[in-house]
Image 1 (tube, one colour):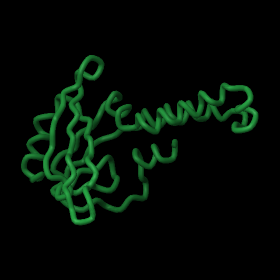
Image 2 (image 1 turned 180 degrees about the vertical axis):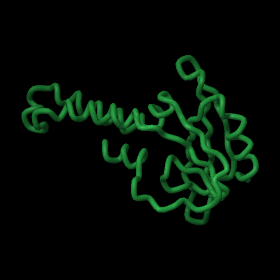
Image 3 (image 1 turned 90 degrees about the vertical axis):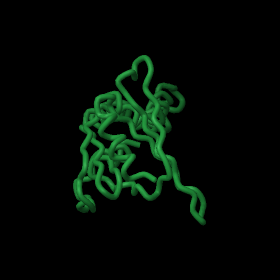
Image 4 (image 1 turned 60 degrees about the horizontal axis):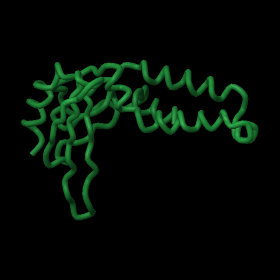
Length: 156
């Protein structure tokens, strides 16, 4: 799980992204937690299983839990940003998701702890092979106007 989360956050040997950069949106800690929440929950469940004495002797090498917690902390403090180009949107220097893969987008403001967060759902387009998966962007409220301006121009 840690390697998957690290690949999502940081690709040091990634190829240069195609297209012209239109907007770069750095995301905060709460948005990073949202980006990594599913693998983090799986990792935490695995680490909780390590507290069961019968399972800990079979599945865990001593120190696995400490390394898992430290690794999760390191991945969560790595800076993340959404990069919007004229062709698609990418997380950091990852592979961009092309705008033509999406047919529309919806926004949802955050509540309570996530009040400074806006979730933008890019809805997948239907193709002859099936439907392309939707993609969620977790952006700060301050960047909402700029992001929506770019998406209105490119997502049709």
